[in-house]
Length: 206
Image (cartoon, rainbow, N blue to C red; front, side):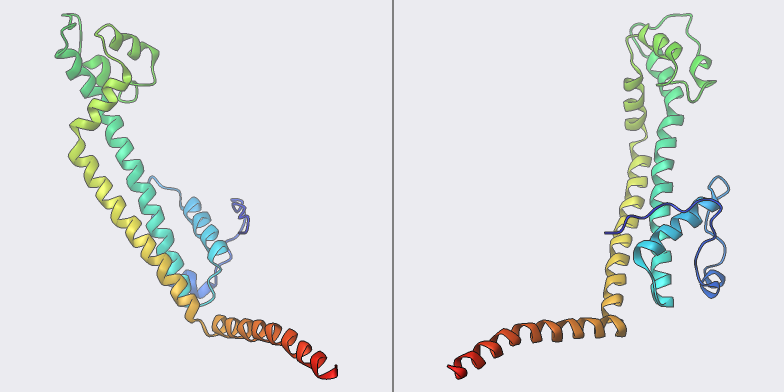
């Protein structure tokens, strides 16, 4: 297995011009890095070494499937993270340790505070709660949405596996590859026959 070094940001992507024209713009959303996507495509191109347009399109589909899997995983994490402040407020409000001085805004005004801020953790501890309690509860409360993300990820993973199989099946039918396999079989057969011929010649000589 080859070691694939990530291409530097200043390095041009080695993709045939006609392939770039057909693939068009990178399918990224506004918060995603086009350069990172191009680097991702290059890494897959290095790994699979596509030789024909069909192989390039399969590699491109593989890149997109993996890219979308990463996107949905980030979205699932974001969903839980943004749900934590409201869930922390609800847990505290329902806690037997609830005090009149609590304000929902203490957490809701800081959507990334839960689990990262010592102040937030200290405040939770006053009500017998931990950051893990909040995160776990937020995930359970949003389980339907989380499962929808998981379903999308699972479908993309299935599609990715199908693309892997399609690529290898196509590569196995490639005329050049078939010729190389045939030559290898012939060479292997020749190597196995040669010792037998030598042995037979020796027997006749004696």
